[in-house]
Length: 169
Image (cartoon, rainbow, N blue to C red):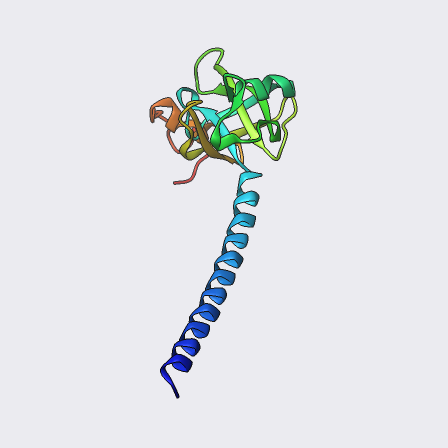
């Protein structure tokens, strides 16, 4: 074999391997993109100063779509993390955290909608969704009993005896 034939074979081999790698990368990126879209459809967001991990809440009313879009933008422009604010639904909620009237705030959900009177529990962990909007993303729990919002109440303890809380251990 001549040096020119060897160089040509090496070059073809390199190009073929590059094409395979690019195809695999594209395939991997496509799979990642699908997973990201699925995860985004289940996103829940609250303002950082209104995040009470483990707290129960009641939905007071859904927000109008235009109001939700306005809240999720800065200077009438979408933020990078929420490029399509019209995919989100906003809700006025009231936390049940042991204070008289509770704390009223907003909850945003991507891909789902609550009705007036629905209830839920804010997830125990959160991460920053948008620093421009001061929004955190979290999950929703199943909602539930009086003990579910204990973390939001400053880990208060009660003086219950086994007979007061239904017996048992």
